[in-house]
Every structure is written in structure tokens, then in C-alpha cells.
Length: 99
Image 1: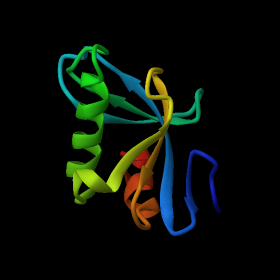
Image 2: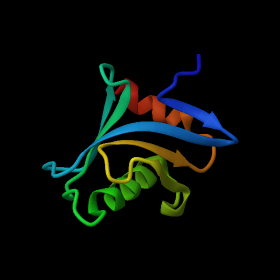
Image 3: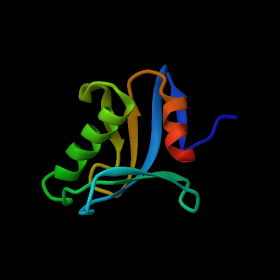
Image 4: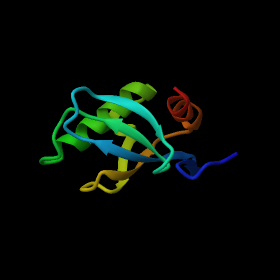
């Protein structure tokens, strides 16, 4: 079943995320059913793009791809973002939702 919060578009993975900047530690917290997004905490504050940079680094590390393979498509200045991952990583992303 294809869900809307994680999907394939033209061979790449799109993920709807809800970022929590200024957290005590950086981690993928899991799926937020109320918002229907993957919740991710980052230590960096939302200043000068620091939280976005850390978000990209964290996702790349957790998925096992290069940082260049992670792009914020929508929401650079918002907590709700659409992130694009180069390639098909739907199964890996769904595993974070089940943890």
C-alpha cells in the first residue's frame, strides 16, 4: 500500500517530515500519526539554515546515502518539510515509522 507521507516520484523517494529544532539530541523519532509525518529531532536551532543542514546530514547518515542525495523540496523555512532522497528508500523510511 502506497502511503502519502512516503512515496516514489520519478525514481526518487519523497518523505513528509516534521522537524523539531533545538532538541537535546538529534534522532529520527518515528512516525507522527496525527500529523501523518516522520518526526525528526535535531540539536541545531532554526537559525541561518543550521537545522536544515543537520536534518540533511542525519537523514543521509541514517539511510546510508551521501548528503548530496538529500534535498529539501518544500519548507526550507518551516518545520513541516518535504524531503527528496535520491533513489528508492521507501522500505528504510517505513522501518523508522515502525520503531
